[in-house]
Image (cartoon, rainbow, N blue to C red; front, side, top):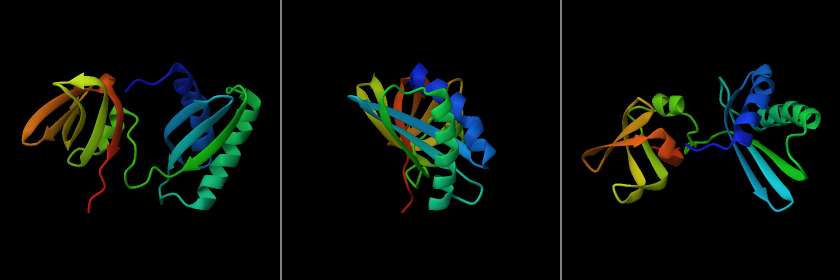
Length: 153
Protein backbone atom coordinates (compact mmCIF):
# COMPACT_ATOMS: atom_id res chain seq x y z
CA UNK A 1 0.00 0.00 0.00
CA UNK A 2 1.54 3.24 -1.09
CA UNK A 3 1.99 5.41 1.98
CA UNK A 4 3.42 8.89 1.75
CA UNK A 5 6.58 9.79 3.62
CA UNK A 6 4.59 12.39 5.59
CA UNK A 7 2.11 9.72 6.77
CA UNK A 8 4.97 7.38 7.73
CA UNK A 9 6.60 10.18 9.73
CA UNK A 10 3.34 11.00 11.53
CA UNK A 11 2.73 7.32 12.36
CA UNK A 12 6.24 7.12 13.85
CA UNK A 13 5.72 10.39 15.74
CA UNK A 14 2.22 9.60 17.11
CA UNK A 15 2.45 5.87 17.90
CA UNK A 16 4.20 6.40 21.28
CA UNK A 17 1.55 8.96 22.34
CA UNK A 18 -1.29 6.57 21.49
CA UNK A 19 0.46 3.61 23.13
CA UNK A 20 1.13 5.68 26.28
CA UNK A 21 -2.61 5.88 26.98
CA UNK A 22 -3.18 2.15 26.35
CA UNK A 23 -4.25 2.02 22.69
CA UNK A 24 -2.87 0.80 19.39
CA UNK A 25 -2.57 3.21 16.48
CA UNK A 26 -4.42 1.08 13.91
CA UNK A 27 -3.83 3.52 11.08
CA UNK A 28 -3.68 7.10 9.97
CA UNK A 29 -5.12 9.00 7.02
CA UNK A 30 -4.04 12.49 6.04
CA UNK A 31 -5.96 14.57 3.50
CA UNK A 32 -4.85 17.99 2.35
CA UNK A 33 -7.80 20.09 1.20
CA UNK A 34 -6.47 23.46 0.18
CA UNK A 35 -5.30 25.36 3.25
CA UNK A 36 -7.29 23.08 5.56
CA UNK A 37 -6.28 19.46 6.15
CA UNK A 38 -7.77 16.46 7.97
CA UNK A 39 -5.70 14.09 10.10
CA UNK A 40 -7.72 10.97 10.90
CA UNK A 41 -6.42 8.42 13.42
CA UNK A 42 -7.92 4.99 13.88
CA UNK A 43 -7.26 3.45 17.28
CA UNK A 44 -7.83 -0.01 18.72
CA UNK A 45 -8.14 -0.85 22.40
CA UNK A 46 -8.11 -4.06 24.42
CA UNK A 47 -11.81 -3.50 25.27
CA UNK A 48 -12.85 -1.74 22.08
CA UNK A 49 -13.00 2.02 21.65
CA UNK A 50 -15.52 4.44 23.13
CA UNK A 51 -16.07 8.17 22.82
CA UNK A 52 -14.11 8.88 26.01
CA UNK A 53 -11.20 6.82 24.66
CA UNK A 54 -11.17 8.90 21.47
CA UNK A 55 -11.14 12.09 23.55
CA UNK A 56 -8.23 10.81 25.66
CA UNK A 57 -6.18 9.90 22.59
CA UNK A 58 -7.11 13.18 20.88
CA UNK A 59 -5.86 15.16 23.89
CA UNK A 60 -2.63 13.15 24.05
CA UNK A 61 -1.95 13.40 20.30
CA UNK A 62 -2.81 17.12 20.19
CA UNK A 63 0.01 17.80 22.65
CA UNK A 64 2.52 16.04 20.39
CA UNK A 65 1.19 17.81 17.28
CA UNK A 66 1.44 21.20 19.01
CA UNK A 67 5.10 20.59 19.87
CA UNK A 68 6.21 18.86 16.65
CA UNK A 69 4.02 20.96 14.29
CA UNK A 70 4.17 18.52 11.31
CA UNK A 71 1.20 20.03 9.44
CA UNK A 72 1.38 23.44 7.81
CA UNK A 73 -1.79 25.53 8.18
CA UNK A 74 -5.07 24.60 9.79
CA UNK A 75 -6.17 21.01 10.23
CA UNK A 76 -8.87 18.97 11.88
CA UNK A 77 -7.89 16.02 14.08
CA UNK A 78 -10.34 13.11 14.07
CA UNK A 79 -9.89 10.05 16.29
CA UNK A 80 -12.13 7.00 15.94
CA UNK A 81 -12.43 3.24 16.05
CA UNK A 82 -11.66 1.42 12.81
CA UNK A 83 -15.25 0.06 12.93
CA UNK A 84 -16.65 -3.18 11.52
CA UNK A 85 -15.52 -2.39 7.97
CA UNK A 86 -12.11 -1.46 9.28
CA UNK A 87 -9.51 -0.18 6.86
CA UNK A 88 -6.35 -2.26 6.65
CA UNK A 89 -3.09 -0.31 6.58
CA UNK A 90 -0.32 -2.89 7.00
CA UNK A 91 0.53 -6.35 5.73
CA UNK A 92 0.42 -7.59 9.36
CA UNK A 93 -3.19 -6.33 9.64
CA UNK A 94 -4.14 -8.36 6.55
CA UNK A 95 -2.52 -11.34 8.29
CA UNK A 96 -4.84 -10.88 11.29
CA UNK A 97 -7.83 -11.42 9.00
CA UNK A 98 -6.84 -14.66 7.24
CA UNK A 99 -10.12 -16.51 6.57
CA UNK A 100 -12.11 -13.26 6.48
CA UNK A 101 -13.56 -11.41 3.49
CA UNK A 102 -11.91 -8.17 2.39
CA UNK A 103 -12.41 -5.66 -0.38
CA UNK A 104 -9.32 -4.13 -1.96
CA UNK A 105 -8.79 -1.39 -4.51
CA UNK A 106 -5.53 -1.37 -6.42
CA UNK A 107 -3.50 1.62 -7.53
CA UNK A 108 -3.43 0.18 -11.06
CA UNK A 109 -5.17 -2.81 -12.70
CA UNK A 110 -4.06 -6.39 -12.09
CA UNK A 111 -5.46 -8.90 -14.59
CA UNK A 112 -7.62 -6.08 -15.95
CA UNK A 113 -9.24 -5.28 -12.57
CA UNK A 114 -8.69 -2.64 -9.91
CA UNK A 115 -11.24 -3.95 -7.37
CA UNK A 116 -11.23 -7.36 -5.73
CA UNK A 117 -13.43 -8.86 -3.03
CA UNK A 118 -12.51 -12.21 -1.55
CA UNK A 119 -11.39 -14.34 1.37
CA UNK A 120 -7.80 -13.91 2.57
CA UNK A 121 -6.10 -17.29 2.17
CA UNK A 122 -2.65 -16.21 3.31
CA UNK A 123 -0.25 -13.32 3.61
CA UNK A 124 3.32 -14.09 2.54
CA UNK A 125 6.22 -12.65 0.59
CA UNK A 126 4.85 -9.08 0.66
CA UNK A 127 1.58 -10.21 -0.94
CA UNK A 128 -2.01 -11.01 -0.01
CA UNK A 129 -3.59 -14.13 -1.51
CA UNK A 130 -7.35 -13.93 -1.97
CA UNK A 131 -9.90 -16.47 -3.07
CA UNK A 132 -12.01 -14.49 -5.53
CA UNK A 133 -14.89 -16.17 -7.38
CA UNK A 134 -13.32 -19.63 -6.94
CA UNK A 135 -9.86 -18.54 -8.12
CA UNK A 136 -6.73 -17.64 -6.15
CA UNK A 137 -5.43 -14.13 -6.83
CA UNK A 138 -2.03 -13.05 -5.50
CA UNK A 139 -1.92 -9.29 -4.98
CA UNK A 140 1.37 -7.59 -4.15
CA UNK A 141 0.88 -5.47 -1.02
CA UNK A 142 2.58 -2.51 -2.72
CA UNK A 143 -0.18 -2.55 -5.39
CA UNK A 144 -3.00 -2.11 -2.84
CA UNK A 145 -4.32 1.45 -2.68
CA UNK A 146 -7.05 0.73 -0.10
CA UNK A 147 -8.36 -2.32 1.71
CA UNK A 148 -11.22 -2.94 4.13
CA UNK A 149 -12.65 -5.88 6.04
CA UNK A 150 -16.12 -6.77 4.75
CA UNK A 151 -18.41 -7.03 7.80
CA UNK A 152 -20.19 -10.34 8.31
CA UNK A 153 -23.95 -10.37 8.06
